[in-house]
Structure formats: structure tokens, C-alpha cells
Length: 278
Image (cartoon, rainbow, N blue to C red; front, side):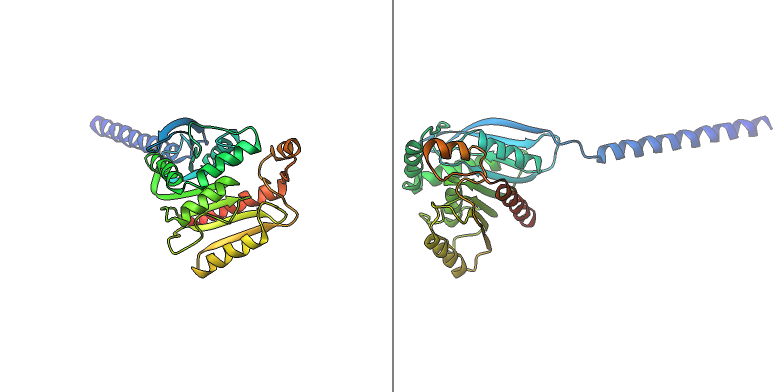
């Protein structure tokens, strides 16, 4: 009888310990499966083309250990500034790794439209160097630990939108491209080399984007049966996504006007593009 009681106590202890371990293992598994809160980390990076030193900014969620799509962001004609870095952080919050790139060299910025125009023109009239700078950024983005190099997009604002579209038309290995308040009369127009799905969001009252250039762009896209969307916001002018637009518009007597509704809608369209692409 004593031996039987001892046996039962031992069996009870074994079963209890086993259940406890299973419960602890289950809790640990549930904890490991729980998503950690988004923790955006931004890092300044330096890189170079053959002839130009460049300064960029990479932003990602450091609590996300998975590989994710990478997105290049090309700045407005003002240069690589806080605005383009903010957009990189916003994309990182959505689960992407974003890199705000430098198309002027050394992180150069313009404080006046005259300088901005000269900087932008120097890039758009020297396509080989523009490609070299863009591709240097593209290669650096692909090397980021958090990036799935098979899933890459590019977006751009104003001058940056024209750059992103031109690079895509030049055959850059991009899955998607989005351009905001961007010119569409490009150094390289849409052709069979275009691989990316394209989104363009412009203001209908943007004097920097002529109706003729829009027709030519759409005709070229249709001729190659490209997958694209061209959105035109009624009553909206240039630089509608930038909250600095009103100040700069008044300061330099330019038709730059921030539009909260168009900004919101265009950002939503970008999210749809990226989700459907990736």
C-alpha cells in the first residue's frame, strides 16, 4: 500500500510538471508571436557614384526582423532636406525600409528657386550621371539588412518625381514608381523598357504641368500598354504635399500651395499601389 501511494505521488508530480512546462512553452510562444510596437530608426548614410559623394537617409522599423520591400525617395528641387526624410519615416512606419536619396551631391540644398532650378537642370541634362547617382542609391538600399532586394519601388516629389519616372523609363529594375506634383515631359519618355507599375498624382491647376505634356505622357503609356494611374486633383496647384509650400509660394511669388485633402488622398493612393505591388 505504501509503495502504491508513493507511485501515485510520483505520477502526480510528473504530470503536474509536464503541464506546467507546456503552459510555459505556450506562453513563451504566444509572446514571441506577438508583434512588437513599431520603432522607427533613421540613419544617415554616405555613398558615391564614380564622380560624386552623396548623402542619404535610411529609415526602418528596428523591431521588425523580417525582410521587407525597399523604397527610394527622391527629393524636390530644393534638395535632400527634412521633408524627404519625414516621408522616409512615414514609409518606415508602414513597414517598409525607405531611403531618402541625394541627387545633387554632398547633401546640397537650394535656398532660392534660381539655385534649385540650376541644380535640377544640371541633373536632368546629364542623364548618365543622373543614372549613376540613382543606381548608387539603389544598390545601397538593396544591401540593407532589412530589405528584400527583389522588392523595390521609387517615389519622388516635384523634380524627384520626374527623376523617378525617368529612371523607370530608362529600364531601372523597379517594381513600382510614384510621382507627386511632378512634370511628365521627361528626358526619357515611357517605352518598352518600362518595367514598373506607375502612379502619378498631380494638381489639375499646376502651371508647371501643361495639359499637352499630360496628353503626351498618357499616350506614350497607353502605346506600350503600361499599368499606370494618372490622378489629377481639381483646383490643386504645385507642391500640394508639402506644408512649406504656402510659405515658399508667398516668399518667392510662385504658385506653390499645400492642399491637405490632396496630400491625404495621394498618400492613400501610394499605400494602395505598394500593397497591390508587394
